[in-house]
Image (cartoon, rainbow, N blue to C red):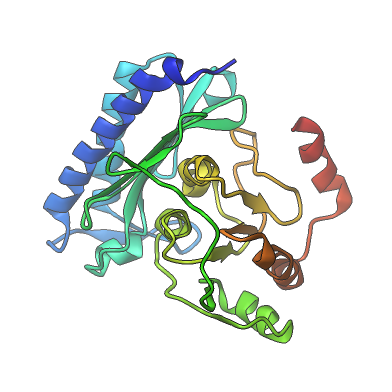
Amino acid sequence: MVTTSDLTQDVELVKNATVAAGILALGLFRGEVKSWTKQGASPVSEADIKVDEYLGQVLRQARPDYGWLSEESGEAGRLISPRVFVVDPIDGTRAFIGGEDGWVISVAIVEKGTPVVGVIYAPVRDELYDAVLGGGARLNGRPIEAGEAGPHRAIIPAPRSVHRELSALGLDYRHGKLIPSLAYRLMQVANGEVDAVATSDGVHDWDIAAATLILSECGIALEDVCAGPPLFDRAETTHGALAATRTEALRPALHAALKAAYDCPPESRVEPERERR
C-alpha cells in the first residue's frame, strides 16, 4: 500500500531535478539549438537530449532500483522494477524550437500501473505543478482546487476531427487554444483555464503520466473513452483517445465525439485492459 509519507522524499527529488532541468533548458531556449526529425515525423532538439541526460543522471543515481521510461532515451528495467520514472524531457518540442512558451518538462513515478508522483514544470512561465497520490495537487506550492466550471460557454481545446463531431452534436462551446504541450494543455483543465481537453489516440505514457495524477488529485479524471482510466507501465505504452473534463455535463458529448472521430479498438483489445484494472 502506497502512502503519502513514503513518497515525500520522491516528490522533492523529482521537483528539484525538474526545476534544475528547466533552468538548463532555459539556457538553450531561443538560442542556436540544433533540431531534427525522428521516427514518426516528430521533432527533437539538442535541448530534449540534454535535459533527458540530466534527468537520467540525477534521478537514476538517486534511485538506482527504479525503472526508467523516457521519450528520448527509451527504457531500462521498467517492467521488473517496483517503481518507474516516466519522463518527457521537453513536452511541446515544436513550441520550444519556435520560441513559444507552451512547453514543459514532465516527470512521473509509476507504481503497479498507477502514477504516485507527478511533476510538470513550465520554465518560461515558472509554473510548477506537483502531486502525490492521496496528497493533493499544488501549483507553485499552493493547493489546486478544481470545482465545477462556471456558467460561461465551455472552452474545449481538441483536434479538428473532434471539433467537427462536437459541432455535429450541437454542443455550444468555444474551441480554445491548442497548446503544443499536451501535458501543459491538461494542466489548463486543472487550473480552470479551460473546461475540457480531448486528445487523439496514440499518446504515450510519458505524455500523460504526470498529468493524470495531478488531474486526479484535483478530482478530475483523464479517461480513455473506450477503455476507461489509463493504465501505465505496460509492455505497450500507447493509449487510445482521451478526455478530461471539469464538469460531468460535458462528458457524454466529448466521449461520443472522440469515439466517432477515432473508433474504439475491437473488444478483444479493450477487455484485457479492463481485467488488469
